[in-house]
Image 1 (cartoon, helix red, strand yellow):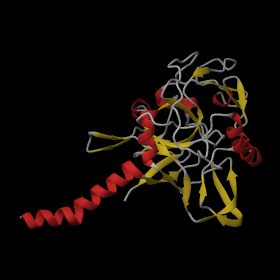
Image 2 (cartoon, helix red, strand yellow; image 1 turned 180 degrees about the vertical axis):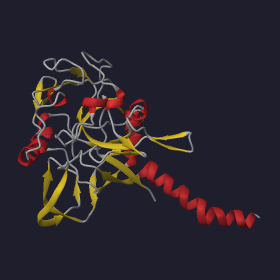
Image 3 (cartoon, helix red, strand yellow; image 1 turned 60 degrees about the vertical axis):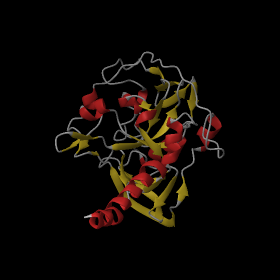
Image 4 (cartoon, helix red, strand yellow; image 1 turned 135 degrees about the vertical axis):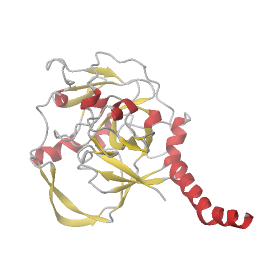
Length: 295
């Protein structure tokens, strides 16, 4: 009996425990499923997440920076109120699918979306790293209420200004079409406790085509063409965010946390049922799901 237990530990339990420790505490890979971070990240690309960094941030050592691409879980209220509901296992466990977005507002920032532009503390954030591509494709959303800072049900001429609460972040997807709206404009700010980690590099596939032609009507990538280039790359903040201020420096990785105001002003919460479309524990193809790959 003792020999069987030792064999079970050696052959099964020990490798599983080691894999769990590595993927939860040290590092893991995440597969991007969806288009909400195009053109920066494409569907099915895999990114590297240093998990230890997130645990340090949650312990008060450093913080996420403007321009970081983060993987996080939507709140339980948002996931539970989604039209088709979250995935469930055995009737007692609720799966909250991961999302991947870019940090735009930091704790204490005053964020306003007006005239399809993002304003941080009264200053316009140059978003051409995202909008230029969508303008070229003819898909840039400039007409919807959310693109102009108006939550569902609010007066069109009354853009919302909110102060990001302490310990939370305002996130946006790089996809600025009507199909890429599942971000903080809909579900609000993201608490630090719900963040799984920062995407630091693309590790798969090894190569990719330079050009991605987008079908606006079909809401899909219609063609990949042009020259083939190496796809291994670090995910650095866009230059406009670096020059804007409070972006991640190259070194050191640890920074003094930013102290924010736990205050929300003139904020209208949308109905949770309109926030996300979930199907069997997966976010819809345009919502930018990130699914963990462990082992």
